[in-house]
Image 1 (cartoon, rainbow, N blue to C red):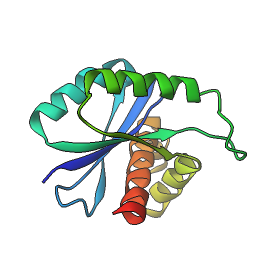
Image 2 (cartoon, rainbow, N blue to C red):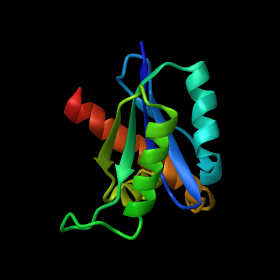
Image 3 (spheres, rainbow, N blue to C red):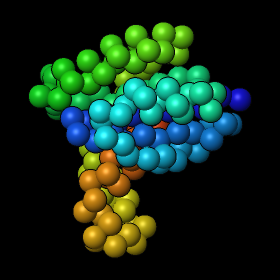
Length: 137
């Protein structure tokens, strides 16, 4: 059974989360340097069967694009170029960073660990993925 992967794409860091093979639970996988985005995914896809890629789409309250939207659109084009056989969907990423911070507090994570932005990125990706699982599967 194939996994679903979710990406919280950023200019410097990219958070990644995946489902278990049965697509029941979303888990934070890692945060990588965005420059390593495509090589990381190529390596991961060579080891794991992935049926779908989700990527967070930054939008404002009124559904207009944010300053980060063009960056994500460019990343989507890279994904389509390198992984043409894997469907790609965008998911709403509004508030996921705030939700990730709150989740880290509730988990009892130390303040020093909460301040590491990479932790927020991968947990935000896991939140987007779990919401997708709850709404679409």
